[in-house]
Image 1 (cartoon, protein in one colour):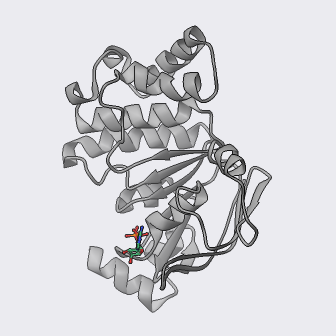
Image 2 (cartoon, rainbow, N blue to C red):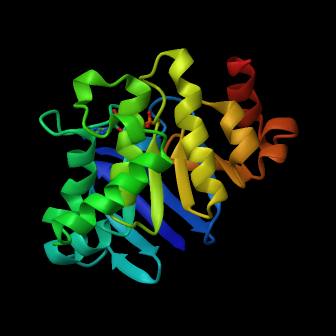
Image 3 (tube, protein in one colour):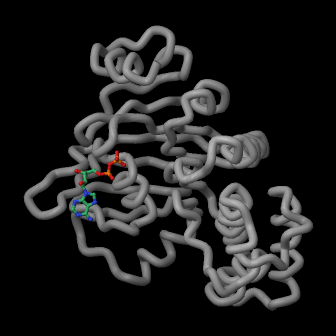
Length: 244
Ligand code: ADP
């Protein structure tokens, strides 16, 4: 479903991603962990081309972008629709209700008739446990509820892969669980997911594969059992020890 080959990203002189490689089968959950500044967010943003990689190849659902060549705007927009992104700070439209937020992409980008988009949006909001909050505006919702709208909004575009960038980092601790629960349900439904998170419990319980990044490259990757119980690399052990 996802294949990344030798992905490099530079910001001016600073090389932030130094040749990332990744292969994810359909339905698998990959969790990215690593110290702050290791390039996790930049990597996610390169996958949906919110950042333009300096070079490398990104393939999602057999559609390929090769950044060693020039890539058209149209190709980027088409490619971006393959992924749904969930941001740390929700990024909801403040002047729209939960329902409006979820309908917006399908109606304006996909040109889906309003009635149909509304029905789909209602189903999705129900799925994330917000059936009774559809007509509330973001300011009327808790952080956990806003983030669940964010997830429903991303799903409304029917992406092939969901990307989560620290989806629970901005939440009060008591609201983290409800968002993780929605993500777990999504994983059980067979969605392919890449998740940047500090929630090690989630990584242990839900991930098929954990990737430990440091300094712009992958230090170690493997099933959670390996990464958390018998990490092979000293750098991984050191990182996990600090978290304990
Ligand atoms: P992480 O998500 O692992 O904390 P980031 O991907 O946010 O790491 O950042 C990796 C490095 O890239 C950091 O050194 C950060 O300062 C730098 N960086 C990120 N975005 C930009 C940008 N737009 N311009 C310049 N440097 C950036």
